[in-house]
Image (spheres, rainbow, N blue to C red):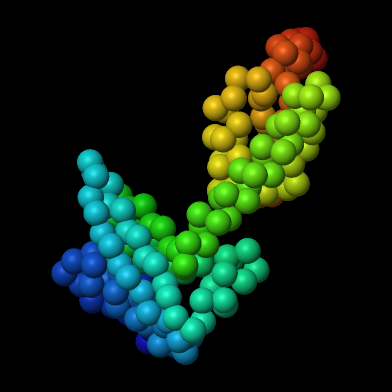
Length: 182
């Protein structure tokens, strides 16, 4: 296994980004004994290279299991490998499997819509369960499109709750916080 990681992080430099990503993916699939294939798309917009990887095959369920943690792990590995080999290239890596990311985002937005409706109808704050930063961003961006509500992350650490509250109380809540600070 040490040989695999030395190829990822310490081996000779490959000539281009695509070959490094392909070698890394092939190594992961081989060492993990996964029944998967992938489609790799690279595109460049401004100074950022987008790397999109979509897996398919018999082990799709493994990638999607546990809220897509294996997808996230592979995405992180690819990001770190590209940063190591091409420190001067800014990359955006997205790893998906059978539309899992879109389904997950749709479920987050559906729940946020439900909580937003409750906050508006009852005129009080409601709370979204603790979420990792990537998922909180999706919820905050969705809620920011509706001027009737505001949202704020609460808590310490990686996973934080989201407070959703009517905008009319936002001004009162901000004023109260400012008064507490003084």
